[in-house]
Length: 387
Image (cartoon, rainbow, N blue to C red; front, side, top):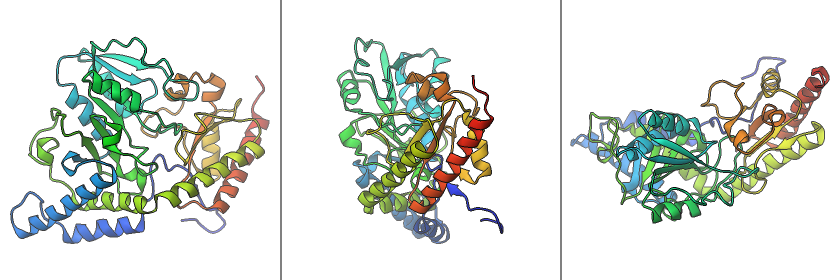
């Protein structure tokens, strides 16, 4: 909401979170009022809630290429990744295979595992953020007990080709966890085709409610729960399920799936318009990440010589909502690990800003965003001493 005389906010931070769709809000409200029973109860009220829960499970499984029994409901992507990594790491310590630029849900979980005697081994990425061509050469598979990787990067939008790693992990009997939190709801994801042991998603990244997500766990894999107190979700994640939020997540995913091609095309055009406008009007810039293999909505762009934090603050005053990278990683002045892993020079990663468009943005908004961003960058350049 804007006050008289105030310019409207342009929201370009959809990788941080998205606005719930009207049909999602309606679905959640309806089931909060009507499906209030405990789905574990045997009476009629509980059974009705159970039907809603299982219908949602089937919808999510069908869209994501999984079996309903492989869908475990959680509070979101972060819990899903924790559940997978700590569940698979219940055995004796070994080496965790990952990349340097993973989401904090992964890096901090692995740091905790390192306190328990685990070792960390990072796969190399190339300057465009994808796994390097020699990333899998001479890996110590005898000591690798767990692997984890992000499918679509939250900061750069870069999409990895996971098939080679997935095949190697299956060959060496190593459970592979995939962080698909940014991918689901933006690109097609087929769990069985990808072939990992587990996959994490969170509803608020695709216009669903906050506080709900899922872990897909392959049927031939087992993990040890690290929470106790109930037998929900087949004993893998205790606690009474929130039927309304689960239904809202399924509705959001269904809405995206029904309009997949049109949404993807339109969002991609909005992102491209933003990129082209900034390159033409905001002076020297560097687009970070692979230009082809990236999410259709994500633009990570640097304005060398400037400070990303200063750009962010100035844009906030101009009512443009964006980010420096992962909202889950506190300490905005810290360099983005993904950009550092890509070998970006300091003048680039310190000057990088992430813009992530969404389905509610308009082409007119993007034109106005370009004008505001270019104005801020030009003003900051004039006031920034030349090194």
